[in-house]
Length: 467
Ligand code: G6P
Image (tube, rainbow, N blue to C red; front, side):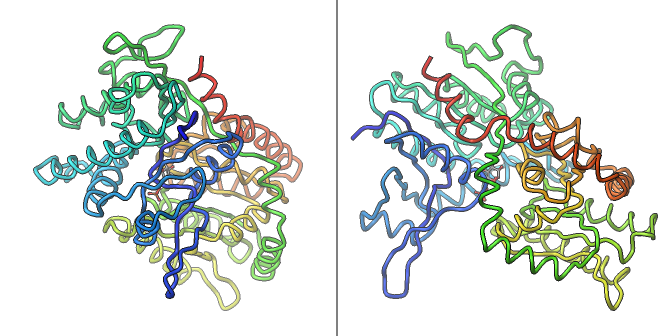
């Protein structure tokens, strides 16, 4: 049956595992985008989620015709997938939107790049074709993220009757970065995005960057923000994704999390805690965070043996060398700090490399200070989750590079992500903040963090598309 509401994203709400005896079982997929969307989409009866088959087990499920209701996996050729996902989405578009290039060496747009771009086009075409096939007349389609920037334009050509939205979970590159792309590639990218009726971003800044890039460097003022292109108007609007307080608190008080909290308490005793939780992702700025902690221990030696830094830094995108090297540098720097300051009874940094959400929730509950210092980040939900579940009244040290900065700046201690000294001082201020002020700030942060929970975030975009 054709669907009235469709979502397309690289990752799906579930993935398969193949047991030794050949049986397939479905498990919930990982990542913030997936958990937010899964909850929100559950309230849209009959909705269909189209995603890529990511593993051999996923592809085997497609081959056998195994499928869960509401999910369609696309079996993309592994070489095409690698070119699109690793080659373009994560090595080019991610770096562009996060301004991560080391300019003397990168980016390089050569024949190899063109080959990968071909895969990216094929990958997007596969999604557009599947959406066109599954959508009912006049259906609403919401396409997710930089993996699928061309799909809106492709889908519009196939199915002009559809209402097409696209949401970007990353920042959007400023014009100075966007203009690095070869002209024809940049035109394709913008043509793809402008195939949507509505484009959503987490912040006003990313939305303005899009308009500015699409209009070559200037944001036209006007009551309706957007871009006119080929006689159509594409609305460009911020929808700052927030967290669902009830759901998160319920998750944070499961017995499994209570157990992890008890274990953490036993480990840290009465030391103050500075908590961070990230994928080991270059934009998260984990290294400068560790340098700031080292500077805190140097400049304010009174904190030695009185504080511990709990850093969850779980590996991500390890197919790419630069991510593997970054993960290694994080481990090395944490070990160097422990070697420099540690004593028989005190280890200054405890790094956890497991993607263990229950442990992260336990750390959130325990935290005295949360460090969220990305150089650039679409939103950063950790900054929003911690104040909601914190028990001690947690001070948020937040960088100006996080999308969450737009909403949380008033009650966080804000820092320039490159300024290690300022970050060290902010950590000191956070650790010494009086309890009443910490509690007040945390309460206000929790209110701001829950302003647009996932279900409302999705329905406001679907409603806008239907009008
Ligand atoms: C982060 C970003 C999302 C992106 C996701 C992809 O969560 O905020 O924009 O879709 O990473 O991660 P993956 O592990 O699928 O490459």
